[in-house]
Amino acid sequence: MPAAMVSGIATSKRYAMADGSKPIARVSDIADGTTKRVVTGGEAVLLCKCEGALYAIEDVCTHDGGELEQGTLEGCRIECPRHGAYFDVRSGEALTLPAVVPVRTFPVRIEGDDVYVDVH
Image (cartoon, rainbow, N blue to C red; front, side, top):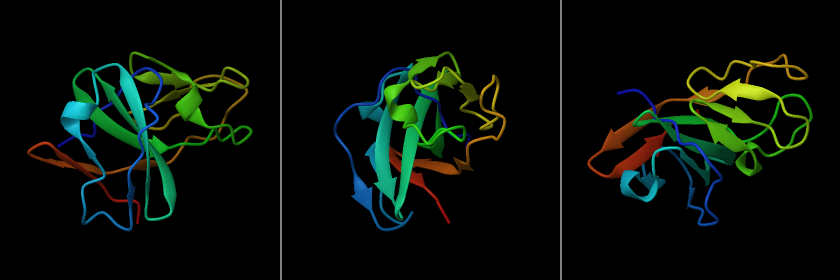
């Protein structure tokens, strides 16, 4: 199942899980076009929901380390709030300068309403 993308600003509620064996969020808590920041396996992950699918990317801009959680999700791309670089949340690809390196993506698994992300 593909990861889903969420547009918008992430909510302040965060989940902390040690590994991908426990759910880190609920699908019903993430509206289409929004994001949710979670920490799992020591990694800050941004869940993004776009076009009805959930995607998981590293919550850091590869240009200067800014948190993408503070950016804006537009369709399936997220804008870094610091310098305006865009990333495709489906692939992690850097779409615009000043970023040239893609962000890491993580596999997403959904079981019922539970969201699992494998950061290993």
